[in-house]
Structures are given as C-alpha cells and as structure tokens.
Image 1 (cartoon, rainbow, N blue to C red):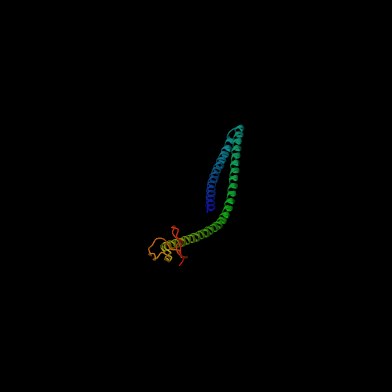
Image 2: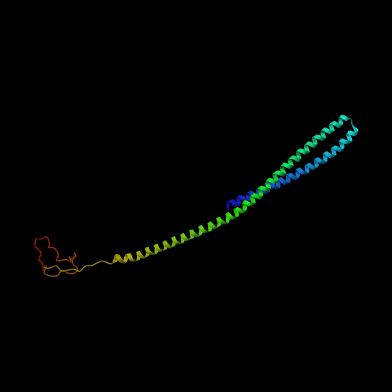
Length: 194
C-alpha cells in the first residue's frame, strides 16, 4: 500500500514537472519568436541604415545582427535541450506507469495476505476464548464438588472395650481401634483378651 502511495506521489510530481517544463518551453518559444521578430525588424532597419549611412555604420549594424543571430541560436539550443529533457521525462513516466501496474498486483497480494493473517488471528482468538471458557467451567465445577468432599467425614465403628465391665457409652472420647481392644492404661494392669 505504501509503495502504491509512493508511486502515485512520484507520478504526480513527474506530471507537475512536465507541466512546468511545457510552460517554460512555451515561454521560451514565444521569446524566441519575439526575438526573431526583433531581428527581422533590426535587419530591415539595418538595411535601411546601410543605404543611408556610411560603410562603417553598416559594419556595426552587421556585427549587432550577428550577435542577435548568435543569441537566437543559443536560445534554440536551450529549447532543444529542454525538448530532449521532456522526452526523457515522458519515457520515465511510461516506465513509472508500468511499475505502478506491478504495484497494483503487489497490493492485491498484500491484501490477500492481510486477510489470511486476520482470519488466522480470529481463529486463534476463538480457540483461546473456548479454552478459557472450558477452564472456567472446570474451575466452577471443581468449586462446586470441593465443598461436598470436605463435608463428608469418614467414621469407623466403635468396638466396646473388654474387661471394663460395662460397655463404654457411644459418645465417649477417643476412637476405638478396629483391630482389637484398647491398650491398657498406664496403671500397670495387663490387658485381658476376650
């Protein structure tokens, strides 16, 4: 896109330069025409003076006419140089127009790549959103099931202690061992197996 804009700006600059050069060339052509008219008028005056004035004056007029002819030839040379420059610029403009056509193709390719990249980005964004939504749902489900797991306590059956005479109340402190009777207290009395 940038190359297209640069190409178009260059084309506008070249067109502006061509227009200015054409105007200058036209001004020089008009000046040349005016000078030629003056030369012709001067020559006519010179011829009239040659007939009226002595020979020395005629030589001075001829020298002046030669100077004017040289000036006109110099202007013609400059006009020819500018004409060559205008032709060279016209060739450059044609070459630039050809390269602008290539820029149009490149611009289409770049636009296709931009569209493809945008689609890939949108796909990746949708995948990320789906993954985030699934993770959020899993986290919510884990939060819902976690309190239920904490609330459920495992309880083992209590076995009454043997030799104590009476069964211990169900609310007594300390859990009973599932493998057998509770160990004897530290009173030194050995425990009796049932």
